[in-house]
Length: 401
Ligand SMILES: Cc1cc2nc3c(=O)[nH]c(=O)nc-3n(C[C@H](O)[C@H](O)[C@H](O)COP(=O)(O)OP(=O)(O)OC[C@H]3O[C@@H](n4cnc5c(N)ncnc54)[C@H](O)[C@@H]3O)c2cc1C
Image (cartoon, rainbow, N blue to C red; front, side, top):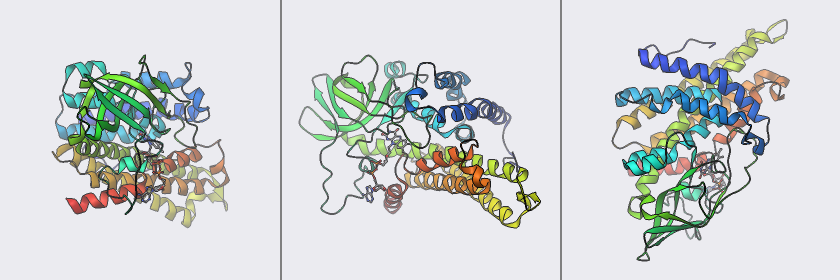
């Protein structure tokens, strides 16, 4: 840590969790993320890949249960400590773990023991919402940004009621995190009920050993390469009707709530990424000599580093404040979560870009870690909604509040 931490009021439990996660992020996630980054998308998820061992170690840490018995305030604080530190270690793995918990989190929300048992927290799941023809469209669930006279066309995935089952057909986009390895999905898609009514629905869908589920090849991409992504196809997949957890009447509220949580998580995670980039640049500037002294002694480098530090601390503060607010309030704020997501991901990208500049030529070399963080940060501005679309959705949420 090149500069003092501003957290002076952590409790004993919070300090213990922070130290455990710091060690895991430093000793396991950072080196694993760097190794996985150099592999092909297929190799990342191959049977002998370190990905599986790292995931097991993450599950074994029991972080999902770290908040049990704590007050909501303590839970919120633990959640940002963990998310920021895991993002600091490797953002691709952080998203794999975060997205992996979607089906089990939703099962927990229902309070139904059969679903909680069927969709356990230690299995890798996914959030399947975006579609090949509907990326931003699916994030704009209130139809705020439909162009006048625009026509969104037909959905790519539909669940149709059929007796006491739903039959799912279609496909989700190549960007679904954990898409080709997930054992289950929290599926957000179009819905046709038995009475002919149409809308949106949320389903918990098993993806393993289920007739009609086909997974594509993993997506190759520039950043967060440790994160598996890929299409899922549904060829008349049948699920019990009670795996529907939200119908048309609840769809918007449910999606709002889910996006609020997801954007909140992204904000703390990418505040951690920004901090990682700043620290690497700070340390490198102390070592690298030009003009006869370590470059950290040159005024322009000092000023650049201080600007980076200022942005990192602002992202950390904003994301924490929003996560606290949204955990403690009965009506979490989507605009606040979006604001924090955009601010942290933009900060991570800008700070990583400045850090790369401080590394000079070494910054573009794969020998050094900064170019990876730069690539990882870049795609976060599209992840969980393009930042510009989220701004429009967030603004409309503010006006409506
Ligand atoms: C790393 C990563 C992880 C992801 N994980 C998941 C996941 O777990 N599950 C999942 O379902 N999806 C996931 N996604 C998909 C992500 O949510 C979409 O990529 C995102 O919402 C944008 O959709 P799109 O890629 O189809 O771009 P498009 O919607 O095609 O947008 C293309 C461009 O057009 C602009 N644009 C689009 N619509 C409008 C409009 N109405 N007005 C003005 N401009 C517009 C956009 O801003 C963008 O610049 C992930 C994406 C990434 C990059």
